[in-house]
Image (spheres, rainbow, N blue to C red):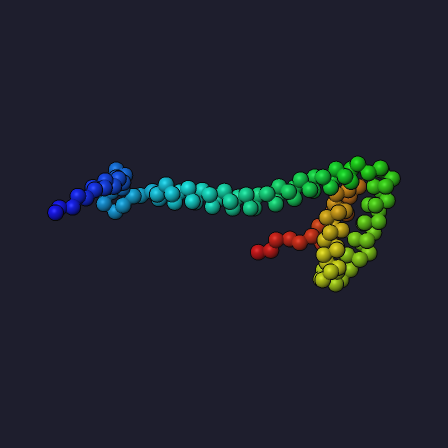
Length: 133
């Protein structure tokens, strides 16, 4: 007795014309690879960009906060900060350990003040880390 069988039709994916025309294969990466590269670049830009933007916004807010202080309070706070920079942070050995971290923070803080003149800026930037080759 013969058995009846079902015939299944499977869809066949056709090759792209550009891939079939070139004997060495496609010249451009596949669309999936391009999407993966774009996603990776977008993720990298987001990972690097968000903290940088956050830091800029924070710096702007800090500058505004210092500007909103009463002039007498701001002058007193600036005088105290610059005296600390000159007394402790410009001394030998201040470029190491915990004192270094404190001095860098003080230098960044003192640069927020509009009272910080050229002498103040030179002293503060001397404490800030610089890129090296």
